[in-house]
Image 1 (cartoon, rainbow, N blue to C red):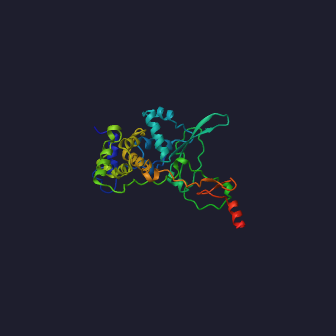
Image 2 (image 1 turned 90 degrees about the horizontal axis):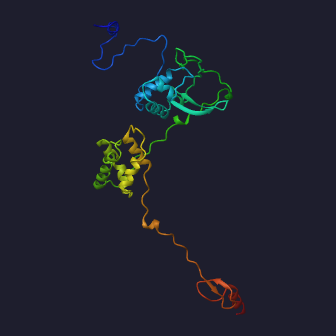
Image 3 (image 1 turned 135 degrees about the vertical axis):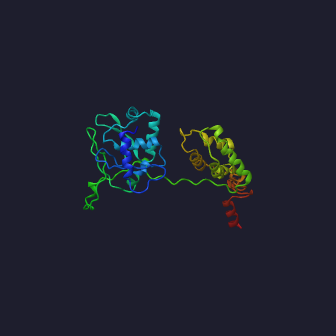
Length: 311
């Protein structure tokens, strides 16, 4: 038997203009009058965040300023454990939404100060920051509201607007290093590199690479082999101290192949000791017994000068 909710939903669907999609989600959008939070799609549809991190990010954004959002507080609120919530908070830090620092209060007590930015990308581009007052009790509207469009204010002294410091965790990332390439990717070298990569999951079950991943990363492993790296050394560099859990095994292997690439082995010429310049030996002057440097025995400079003057 249909419930009142189902009947109301059926009536709402009949009011949607245009043909309904044959599959997928259908939105019944009713405008909110109160108790709502504006969330950007860059967070709700972030392709680098887990569903837990997205949910916690939306929850934190909906809270008033001054709310407790530590691991203990979130664990008491949600069914996820401390490990999952701590991992989600680290994801939000990595992508610039969350920034946590230790600060000392006036009474000497150390506390963790948490800053949540609803648009990290806009902050890097110099977007305006809306000041938020600390609420003494829960409120029914979002803590940060986008200001309505307004004309540019008149210029004011620079001291009136202190610079906004961008936290280090949302600073621009350095460009990713390219995958190393061997000087010549022979069939034998390619086969050995592919076998080494495919065999990684025997030594680290987390590093399961697809065939496409192995084919893409084989030149990087071949560059290591070409430089004389032993397969055991390559395997150790790629499987030691992996993040837990490794979300993107192929990205981890690619990063380590590029960053940890050893230099080429030096040849015999580079390892040979540097030649020293020949040292002229000491001789004893046959005229005055003075020591002087000369390849051949004879007289010193003064004795030779006296001889030529007498001549």
